[in-house]
Amino acid sequence: MYKLLIIDDDVELCNLLVEYLGGEGFDCSVENSGISGHERILKEDFDLVILDVMLPGISGLEILRRIRPSSQVPVLMLTARGEESDRINGLELGADDYLPKPFNPRELSARIKAILRRFNRDQHPPTEKRILEFAGIKLDPFSRTLYLQEKPQKITSLEFDFMEALMRRAGEIVTRDTLSQEVLERDFSPLDRSIDVHIGQLRKKIGQREDGEPRIKTIRGTGYIFAKD
Image (tube, rainbow, N blue to C red; front, side):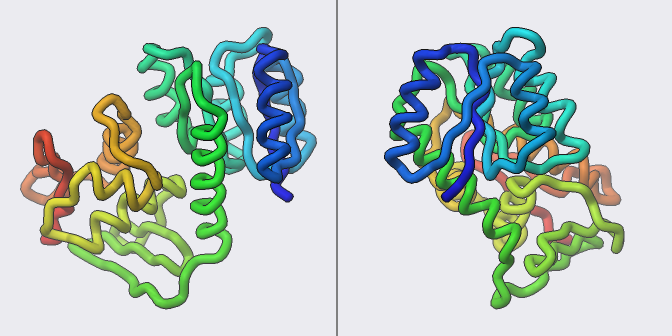
């Protein structure tokens, strides 16, 4: 049974989530303040953390900032509807996904299951996929490691999956719809900035080509191309 930690100061919402997610087979614990939630993450092992942005004590973003140097526990952020800056900041700090309030508990459960499937792929990588290598960039699906000029780079699980989707179609346009279905396991929404943020983070980490062009090109209104040479 997966252990989840819910950190949110809305007691009524927490009770609802404990009941619903418990029925889905999850073992849920709850903390209602940022300070106690942060301490709980440091003391116990959880399979996933559901983390509200707005919390008493310290914010959810500050919790994420503090734990990421030492913990890669999957984190799903809960954000206020319309607060796009919080969502982008959360993703850049290492959140695995976000869900704006109010939300349907079924959608939350689906997001949790998708994140856990990705995390399990990290722990048990496939053996049938081949190593991808183009122009000094190597992607190893066995160790789930990205190398730049033979040096391993620190990337998140989601960033690896986005990079793999692009490199397996090197030189071809990969639409946002395809990336959303394959990596995030949901239909693409034009209001969802997740893909753009993760691709932006990848661009910073892999740098540019020798001619100064980005290795991952944006095709406006469509998707992206990974330049293989």
